[in-house]
Length: 394
Ligand code: ADP
Image 1: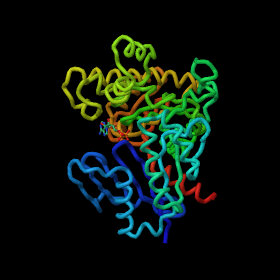
Image 2: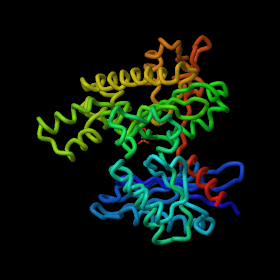
Image 3: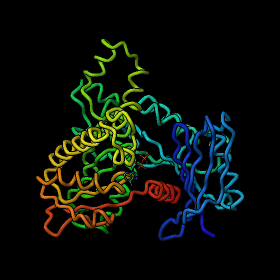
């Protein structure tokens, strides 16, 4: 019987999960789903690999399940499906591994305490990522748990790349560019050798365009630079996050507009980006279909920011062989890919409209100087692979 690995990705009000079976050569997805609305109107759904619903439950409006309750419910569903007796480990997505955790590792109480120290660096993610680890350590201390960090993949960035023009002591104290979406980039880097061996060995920029969005410059499959910095606010404009901003704007909002830290945090994380500019939606699909006057403006600014950051990453790499589009917008929004490639005409990029509209893997024309790829990311599989590897070393 195969071993089972559960992957958990806990957000502020949701717990996403996947169940993988170890098939030796790779890991096969068996079940996936989520518990949402953990503090408002909880809803749990689990689907099999073909997408058919195999378990579902709704709780009354106003009921609170919390992360521990959601985990308990998930374990019950897995028990019913005889998956718990084969469970060899749980892999967690943890947004922040700080300056030193450059790879996944097994979590015990000491490591968990260490990871808590990074909560101020990612206040909207880290505490939630750690909640199920804590709950499982209490309930099932013998069950191995592995933390996989969104920052680890970027620890290969040169020290210079990680620095701000701030006093050096602050860099030593952890005020540095960490970069995020590392599990997604690592997955793309792991499949790129099959798709485009020359780009995998050379210079590639990956555009992870989801609700959160960033870009990463890969050289020989390793991250050399990315658009996100100290927090996941930096770089590209996102669904509700501002992206890069003159820090003077924050000082002005606080000193002249009387905004306190909580109000500025809310503005930058939840009220800006596509939502803030358009005034209607943070969702690209909605904006593309919208007639609202500022919907097009929001998309234009989104594209302009990508164009600017692309130039910056090409400069960091000293040239470019390929672009990879991934995540919700990168994988599904053909019109956005088309516009990004048109903006990259100066690099010799040329998109094949038919391939792009069809959502093919290869998007470049034969005359294009850059290879253009559409590759679906799979952060969950990356976490499951890491978890298996860490447990095999134990
Ligand atoms: P998250 O960062 O939350 O994982 P996703 O990677 O799922 O987000 O990306 C969500 C984004 O992808 C949303 O802006 C959504 O509108 C966009 N998206 C998904 N499908 C399409 C589509 N067919 N066309 C345009 N945008 C899409």
